[in-house]
Image (cartoon, rainbow, N blue to C red; front, side, top):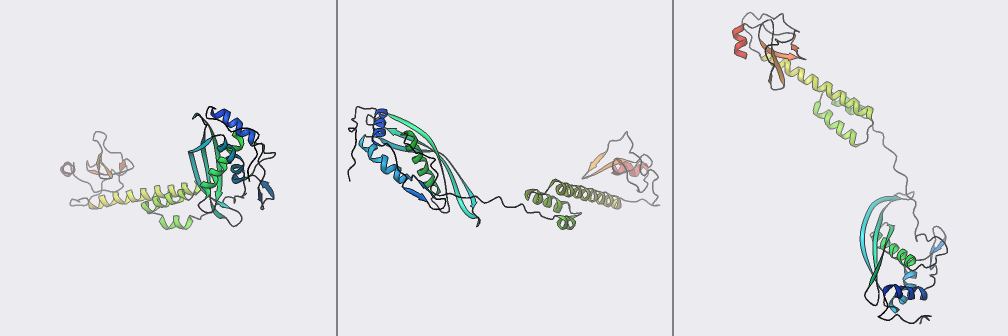
Length: 283
């Protein structure tokens, strides 16, 4: 079936703008050839728009070239059944080339959703439909919704995890508490829970350091007599620098001049008295 046109075909001497004006003269409106059964309204599909505009574009020597400028994709859950779908947004530049070879372009967005692998194709079709309708100022009479409507599912409710049992099981275990803190933070635990794990970790680390200090004391050589020094709890002699050995700090006892581990900057509560010669040997 041939189409009757009011205007003659565009010649090769016309620029792209004159050719598009001729297309607009030929295509006055596009009917709504689709029906959305879910929402109960008519719509203009991409096929209807291209069927109406395509012959006029060819008649007046206008070519349309798409160029994808931007693309985004995300997975969403749709409907009461939380069906997994792909939601795609594109930005496309459509370049119109006239019979004389000159060009003009339009940049338009498009978005679509699909449960399969056709979301990108749908989004590109939506963008092309928008471009043709708006570039050629085709009347739409009312808003032009997409063929398919979707109802996004609400966000999944947050899962409240009770970290109490895990915390109790890891008390005293520095590495275990560190790992528990990482897992709890990644799972979105509240600040109070994270703070409790941190405090438990600090307590475990302090206990571990105290055990290390006690082990060092137990390993010290004890001279005959096993006499305990009375300088316990005092600050080390200020004229001697504290010497770090591993993770334990040492200082000189002001009473017996022995180098012994420090507890919070003071001499440990119990240590064996050493004479000056033994202290010099430790140094």
